[in-house]
Length: 391
Image (cartoon, rainbow, N blue to C red; front, side, top):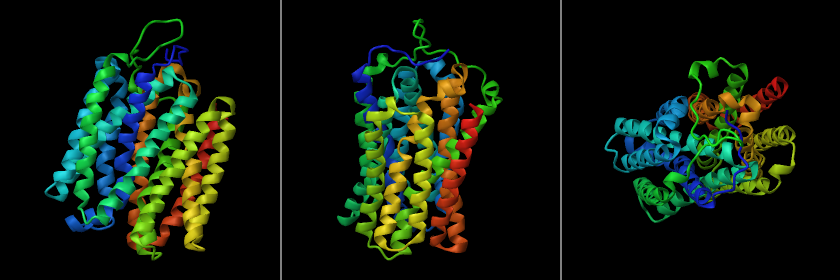
């Protein structure tokens, strides 16, 4: 049975995990700024953005479904090392892609590596550490996502190609692999405070999927992470191509979206152990809805920027709070599988909702993105209310 362990914090592992999540966040933050250039390089349409996002989702879903089995067979340390190497290959593939279909192929590889890393590190933190450290882990993701747009915008300002950004990220990933090897044997999953067993066997996948609470959690993760990705991936294009904001300012505000996201997780980490999880999450979802309405209203550039920042800040603590609480919320027996399912559902949402927005943009124009985000925020709030009642 997987529960949180009161064991002493291994700060070497924590630091490596935080660096890992910085690297995990970089591609997500960078892609929204890089997309118009990628689109022009390969001569594809706005709707093809969804295809590219779905390639990573395929890999993420495979990783999410089989994360429990992978960790049980290899051990969490070796599994994370292998996944980091796979991610490095995927990023290098983006940098050298000769054509669109090659980019699609390496997108699957990158998604597989990132999915195993995401689920594995979340599983380790959920079983060993408190909500405070979990929030700061996900703040590290936000930090990487915030630097992504700045990196690509800076390269564009220097007249560099988008491929240079992915080359830099591949190099970072290789450096991270070397650092990660120093803690390889320190990654463990404690089954219970009274047990010395580690890396527990997960129940059958189908058995976990039969649990109504697990299915509801999958739906919730799909929608609210899709909302997060829609705001990140489409706001730059909306601001520059529909609202006449210059590319440098738009890139800075997309970066600030991720900075507000990171700030939210950093600040919430200080109080996460002392607040009601359900009340905090409900307040955050309401604030996300308010931010989406402000962005969609397009009263002025300033209010659009403010709405984007509010969305990022309010979304910040939701993922880590729900993930940390997974053993208590869904049952400790199914937590190993459920965390993988949630990560897989998040990856599907990250690809699916921005892709759906892309199809709507093709038919209705870029300003449809705002109302689309309002709808996603409202559905997230409703799903959470059902999840609360089912506990």
